[in-house]
Length: 294
Ligand code: NDP
Image (cartoon, rainbow, N blue to C red; front, side):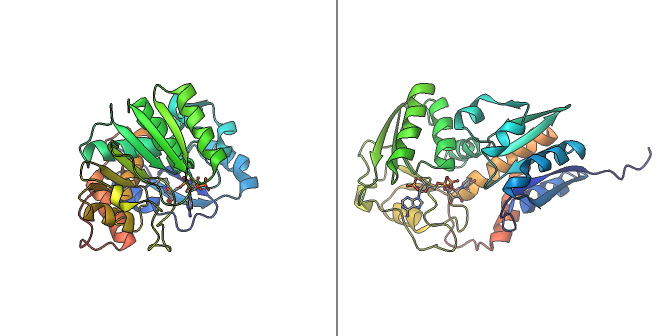
């Protein structure tokens, strides 16, 4: 067999992008499966996205991840957007099928897979409270709604964002949804099964910040989740554990959304444990104080 020096290319377009850790887990997966693939972290300014997408086609890349600020803007450069990504209104993963570029959103699917596999919870029929109404919250709530949760309560600081998300869920998914404006300390309804922090509160470097909720309303029957991947054991999750609840961290969501992207691109099952370990090393996470979520 003749030698093939050509690598298959994927990567991420973002601005800023230098601190995006995805390269670490995707390259670890390529090495584990001995694939001659490369993941490139590429800085693309907003005004250059169209040219970058032409470059993607010209280089015959297998696909790309999109991060801030390109997840919505990329929609107009794609040939197709799959149904859930179209509902969410944002694409974080593009795959190539022949000459066609197809947009997907793996964020909410990654959360769902982490919920099912790490927390062993089937969301169907569950009552869920989600803090936040931004991109992560949209992706998570659309997937939860499509997975059959019985009710979604969206709690958000900005009323317009919260109401827009609730209208989307009510009009275009089977789930029942309610908006609650976030004013002062929020009390979690007693019948809640799943509570998700989908805000950016607690993200590095503001690692001591916690969402403003009445912690005494967290009960042991709840599963409490956070989207913050770094550091994953947030003060919010620590508090929930003190109240007897089970917790699920945002590192699992990050790993699974990457694993789903890996499968979309390569057609192969991703080595989940290898990817998670690579991210833990990159985030310099010690094993202490990190009990769940993987
Ligand atoms: P957005 O900017 O789209 O949304 C941020 C949300 O957080 C909004 O609902 C905003 O409320 C709320 N918020 C921020 N600060 C406060 C505050 N001080 N008090 C109350 N609400 C606040 O961000 P994304 O949705 O894209 O990202 C949110 C988080 O999700 C980030 O930390 C990101 O790292 C994480 N994430 C994790 C992923 C994973 O795989 N683990 C994947 C994707 C994202 P308002 O509308 O009022 O401004």
